[in-house]
Length: 185
Image (cartoon, rainbow, N blue to C red; front, side):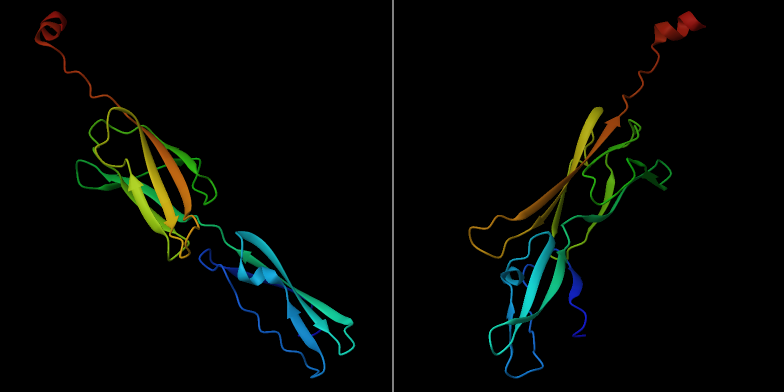
C-alpha cells in the first residue's frame, strides 16, 4: 500500500540477508534500498527505501523494520526414568524462558544415573550439544546445552549460545552397621 510507509518483518535467526525489490509506480522515478538488507544483525534492522523523483527530489521514504530472532531454545524439559520405568519430569528454577540461560533443578536421588534432556531450538540450522547429563556424580553436576549455528563464511565465527543447568545428586545413605543394629536392639 503506497500510503503506508512503515512495515515490520520478523525472520528466523538463520536469515542473515534479505532482498528487497522496490517497484515505483512512475517510470521516471526510481527507488533506492538502504544497505542494512545485506547484513542483518540479531534484533531490529531498519531498512529505508527512498523514492526519488525525476528531478532527484525525495518523494517518500518507506521503512521496513526487520527483526532477526536471536538463537535460543524454544523448549527445555528434563526428566528421568524412576525404578518403575515411569518418566518423571524435573522442575526448572526459574521456569523455562528462552532468554534465561541459567537454571537449577531440584535435588535428585542418588539412584539417578542420567537425565533425559529435550532441547528444541528456534533455528533449523542449529546444532545442539548436551554435556553432563550422564554418569551423574554425588554432589553438584553442571549440564551444558550448547547451540551452534556454523558460519557459512570464512573468518566469521560460529554463533554460539550456552544454557547451563545445575543439579545436586544426593549422597547414597550409609546402611546401618551390625554394631549399630545390636546397639539399637
